[in-house]
Structure formats: C-alpha cells, structure tokens
Image (cartoon, rainbow, N blue to C red; front, side, top):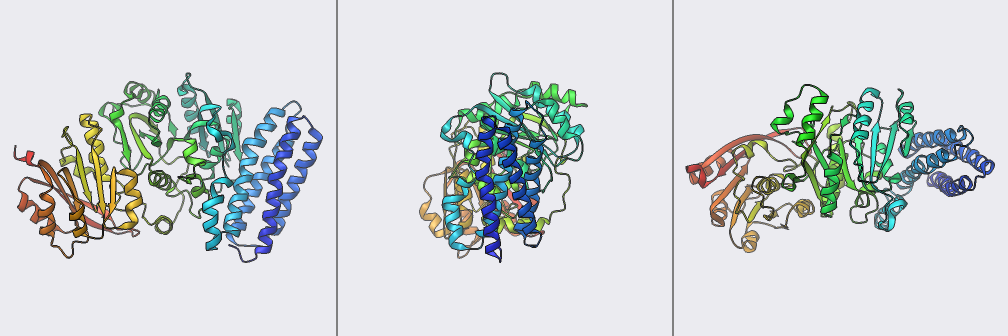
Length: 566
C-alpha cells in the first residue's frame, strides 16, 4: 500500500471511470455515433493526463509503473482518433482488444499494489473474491469459444526474426481447426508494427513502451477467444503439425493444462533432441527433418515438474478464468519481473493438480534469447522473492532431473507397478523414472508414491504424484509403508534418530526381488557404504544448487540394480 491513500483512491476512481467509459465508447462505435465517440475519447485522454499530473508529485513504485501504463493507454486511444473514415471495424477491434486490456491491467495492478498489498485482511479477501474476477476473460465464460486456438506471436524488435517466426506460423496453422491470429508488438522501435499491419491478423496489439514486466505474455489472454491459447516468442519457428499435435494431446486429456515442445537452444533439459534432428545445416533442412519427426505419440508426452516456455499452449480457461489455479491473477499481482515467470506458471498448474507436459514427439526451432535479450536482473534477489511468495526456490532440489543418473539407470522394467520416492525435493528424478518407463516400455500405469519430511513441498509433490504425504520422521514412514516397490529413490535428509545404515536396510526390505534402489546423498561416506553393502551398484557425482544461494554442493548418486551382475 502507498502512504497517501487519499491520492491513491482518487486515482483509482479516475481509472474506474475510464473503465466504465469503455462500454459507452464501444456502444457509440457499434451505433456509428462517431462524434459522440470522439468527444468521449478526448475526455478519456484528459483523464489520463489528470492522472499523470498527480503522479508527477509521487515517487512510490505503484505510481511509477502506472505512469507508463497510462502512456500506453493514451497512445492506444490517440491512435484510434487518427483512423480514417470507414475504418470503424479497426477502431472497434483496437478499442476492445488493445485499449481495454491495457486499461484493465493498469487499473488492476494499481488497485492491488496501492490499496491492497500489505493489509492482511484486505489481501485475504482480495485473493478469495476479487483477484480472478478483476481480470477475467469475458469471451470464454460459459465454456463457449469462437475459436479452437488463439495463436499469439510476441515481438520486441529483431524484425528479421519476427518475419521468420510469422511466416512459419502462417504455414503451420491447421486448416481443420478454427484459429485466430493475435500479433503483439511490445514497444518495438523498428518496423515491427508496420510489418504486422501487412499480415492483416484478426487482432493486433501495439504497446508503446516496453515495461519489461511480462505484460506482453499475459495481455493476449484478455483478448483471446480460443479454447486454447498458443503463445510464441518471435525467436521461435513452428514446424509442421506442431500445433495440431499439441492441440490433440490436450483435447484428449483434460488434466493437461500446459504443453511445450522440445526446441533447440533451451535449458531445463528440454533440448534433448533425437539424433535425426541434429543432422541439419540450414533452417530449411531443419524444417524438413522436423516435419518427418513430428508424430503424435502418447508415450513421448512427458510430465514435468517445470517447463521453460519460448512457446507454449495452455487451456485458456485454466490460465485466466480459473479460481482453482489463479494463474493469471498470480502473474499480474506480483513485484517480480518476467524472471521465473515460467517457473511460476508451472507451479500454479501443478499445485492445482494439472499436468505440465513436455511434448517430446514435437521439435521446433528456438534461436535463443532474442525476444527478451539479456536483461540485467538480480538473479539472487528474484529467487528469494519467489521463495518468499511460494515457499520454494525455483532452483529447489528436484526441480529438474539429473541426466547422469539416467545414464546408469535402467528404466526398461515393463512390469513396473510402484515407485517409492522419499525426500527427493520436488521429485523430478522420481517423476522422470515413471515417465521414462512409459516412454521405453509403453507402461503408462505406474504408480508414483512420494513422502517428504518438508511440509512446504507437499503441494508441489501432490501435483506430480499418484500419492504424496508429509511425514514427521522415519518412524511415521514405517507405519505408512505397505507392500513392495519396483523402484525406491531415497535421499538421506533428516536421518535422526536412525542411522543411515538402519534406514537403508529397512527400505531395502520393501524392495521387490528384482527392484532398483537409488540413493542421493551429499555424504561420500554414505555412497561408499551403500556400494559395499549392495555390491551391484553404479555411481554418479553431480553438483546441486543450495536453496536460494549461489553456492553448489556435491551430490552423490548410487544405484543398486540386480541386473548389473549380468
């Protein structure tokens, strides 16, 4: 909250009046009352000027950001007054799908940060009742959709890449689906705006000034009329059938909220491409090999804890209108920049019980960091902010699986029924075992059971597991465990009052005769003991980021597998 609430409430009142005026402006355009529209539009411009005059005397953050957002709204409204006669449809589209979303975001963010944040009672009511309602998409309420997919391209300068991106999109739009095209120019200073105008998209959004706050990612969601929304950065090239395959996978499984295809030049182990895709020398050759590779295969739809998203498709309703995820609201009402935005989206979907799916049956081309460039964010500060908000670090243990472990791990046990995971952080290695078995053998019925002694991790584990439980200690675990397991993954956290050897021997008793036992530890002596005790063991060493710190500690993996004797 700001100090001077009286000024903030006055500004909020002007913004609410401007929001009400939008409906009158829309009615005037629909009724062809051009003079009435012009008069009211000029009044709206004066309203933004009045806000700016007040803001100039204030230096608090909500005012500084509102000043730029008002500039963007002003520029949008001003451009409508410059349209020629007989361009009513263009004005109406700009009013409804550019100006109004910009104004809604300006109002919502100012309202929250100036008048709500910091007041515990008001914040609780806000998240319970107002957050989602304040920025709902009215075009998709009631489960009716004008389109199957809203395809949105985001551009910030780099016109040469934008042209390649748009050309690829136009070639890849599935003709059997109803699709709309939304082009977003986020404050470009080159000729991006003019180029977009030559495409004649269903919707074009121009943002005068780039705030580097991720608004370009969320703005299209307020204008989308599709059941699904596909967001594409201008440094990505779609490939043949990519859209249709993502759409088909999500249509078949209502638990999938969010999909990302594999791409080149990406982190989070999402760029592990099949050998045939690596054999290209030009973009044209890549497109040809990708077209041959892209085939819908359920076993290659890999559930992930987190996804990085140079392009992604999600269910529009789950993202923007959902009280269950509050994903859009959480994105809009935060101090953080676009850093860790993809971590946040993944977190909100998995905590709501939905799947984040890496589409390994699709490959697209990503040039890498063209759209956002290399902004100077405070990496550690952003991580700590994320932790304070969600109780986990975006680089938490188990946020991504360990490649070296899977070089020595056998995931081809087709008869696998149950996997037990204990204290493995966010659980990426455990989930990867389950997904690898599905991919390698076609067995999609494996049960993943996770136990954690860190209660803060339980909401995330519930989102990726068939069963997840918080336990105080090992005694409680022994009371819970029943039956045998094909895989046991165990991290040596919180051993007291038991010894490492006692815990290992007890867990080993729950292992199937041909089961696989996997240890993760920071103690070399434990890995050494494990190797001597169980004989048929392979080892791997790795570095692990310490939660919310820029330091690394050695991690030791040891895998017992009876098949190693052969």
